[in-house]
Amino acid sequence: MSQHDFSTFLDQYELGGPWEIAAGDSGMNNTTRIVQAGNNRYVLRIYNNHQNKSTVLLEHEVLLGLLGQKNRHFDVPMPVANRAGHTVTKAKGGKLATLCHFIEGKRPSVENISHIRGLGTAAAALCKGLSAIKPQGEPIYDPYYKLEQSYEAIGITALRDIAGEAGLLPVLEEQISCLQQERASLRSDLKSIAKLPHQWIHGDLNFSNSVARGDAVVGLLDFEFCTVDVRAMELAVVIVDLIDWADEGQLERIASFCEGFGAELRLTEEEANAIPLLLKLRMLDVTLHFMTRWREQLDEAEILHKIVIQAAKIVKWTGSNELRLKALFRELLAGVDQPQ
View 1 (cartoon, rainbow, N blue to C red):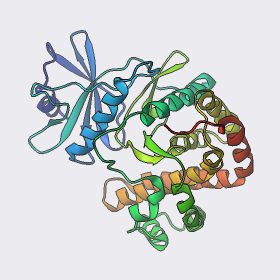
View 2 (spheres, rainbow, N blue to C red):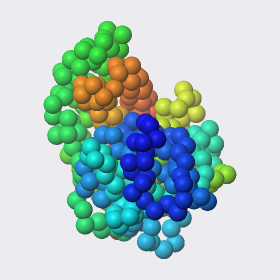
View 3 (cartoon, rainbow, N blue to C red):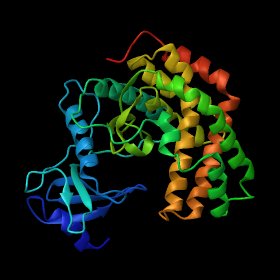
View 4 (cartoon, helix red, strand yellow):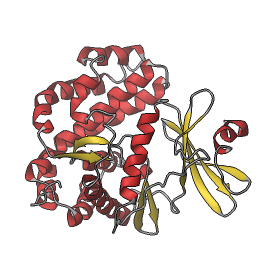
């Protein structure tokens, strides 16, 4: 993007002086830049995947709810109001942006056990914080267990059809078959998953959406997909990263994360037992999300290729280690705490 494109948004703020742009870590859905203005640093996020102001306002309502809580052990982005007093800024073409105060630190590393445990502690603290907020806005995104309704246009056979159109077959025949079989098997579990304890969750918590200083995880970012879902889904989203990162040591990393989480918050035994199912559900959702993006010409086939390989790998590993995972989750996570 050009300097003019950024000024379209930044000129609507009172930043107290000239500003400069530095590159930030942009995701698939947004353009992110660090803004330096005098002694202050901000993060500008420009939304590329929607122009829905209510979605951003709900995100800000959640953030402000968390920011208003006492004894909070982690930072979250603080939205900055523009000259009109609004925290959502609009360009003439309809594109939306927000500006938040910068949280000092770096991304935590999956290679650092202290970061893994610290993210577990932060995730549990976040669960507690989110259980106490009551946003006026309605959830925008469906819970993960509504997979079949959310992706009704991509049935089991359509999954294979899209893979063929994207040129993934016959190279990824085994992976596509694995995902098809897992989706068919998981259908019978979706009703039982829907009965687990619900609350507001971040929905996309991972190492990329966190901030560390030293060995401590001190900040949680990108609440764009915050919604009401089963509470245990928050853990599943993080754990898939721990499985995917390397081909060995997964159980040890998962145990470190769960030790951090369990020291702060305990789940019901039903929630602990359901996490392997939620891991598979997360990866099926990710696969169908990126199939949708490919069909809408938002991504190249190469990206979908990587996603399918990743999803099948995690689904297969989870199935092969399901008994050990359930035992680990019951030991480190199950207890007496209930959602508030």
